[in-house]
Image 1 (tube, rainbow, N blue to C red):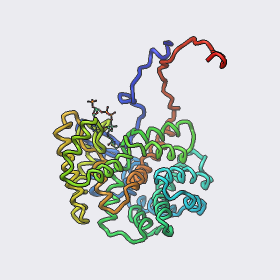
Image 2: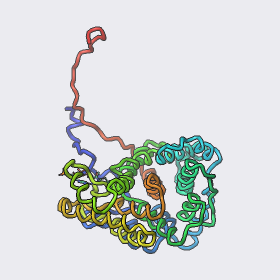
Image 3: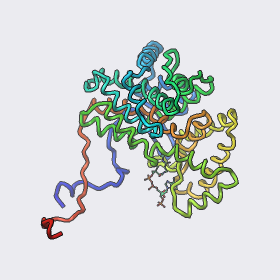
Image 4: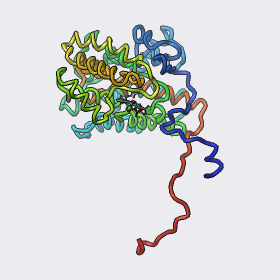
Length: 382
Ligand code: CMC
């Protein structure tokens, strides 16, 4: 082992490594606390909007009315996708995974942005605004395209949550639906140096560009150990089918040593505070929309998990009750993770801008465990 490697330590999964400094979100995994810039997530979910929360994450403070109006206007002015992106989306196969469609279209947005490669803070804020404003339009446009429906133009009189539902369904959402989605966006907007945020940091730290970073982050998010878990939860509920089948189905999963989607977290060893909020929220929405069966199934799974693994610090995470919430909002199962991406775009872009303000290339070492001094064997002798 070289002296250089000996001084470093191997930390599998970087679980015990602090890889960045950030002023955006604070997580206390032992006590189940999440704050954005010091404000408890519950306060923000009750009182804020996704746009205001985005300002908070990007600026380190809440906006005054004029500042919020300015950000809202800037976002709404960027809702529309370039026609080249609409044309591109129309070439995507109807059976493509929405996360692949989103990743491709977000990377392609760089082709239509003359500032794509300008990395100064002002240009990056303008690009962050474009990315946050256009991501919902990409998701909605792809869903309309794959369903054989006309793509709906954005409506700049609406906020991001309402406009997304409008572009997706071609109908104005009810206030309850729009507010529910807005709250989901707030709860998912940021979460420390999670896998996708870290991916975005690795990319931006090479002095690449925001679009490349976001495309990379979307790729990391879609995995079932990360944002893809919300789809996994819904698939599990569908697969189990009804409340009577839960106990046997869970026992089978335990016997097979399967990880239960929507449970456990690298940081939280207590109840994920986002799940606390979403649980109450999912119940209300399920009641309003006739999806109580789904909520009751989720509750029973939680009870079983409580008995089986709570002692190990495994509790529902943000993805568990967001599945019931999104389903009650009428979203298709494979749009659950894209919803997460729409929200996290504000956190990802904020972290990248923060990284560039005090940048250093992120390049960990690895411990070589292969052989040394091996002969090169000619092809004819292998
Ligand atoms: N179901 C059953 N057992 C679990 C689960 C689960 N969901 N999660 C962790 N465990 C057990 C695991 O088997 C291990 O047990 P033991 O020590 O006896 O071998 C122990 O808990 C530690 O698990 P780990 O996988 O080593 O922990 P980690 O920190 O590497 O993993 C995790 C965290 C989120 C990947 C994991 O909990 C998991 O796979 N959960 C299911 C997928 C999921 O819901 N992901 C969403 C995470 S929250 C949203 C986000 O930030 O993306």
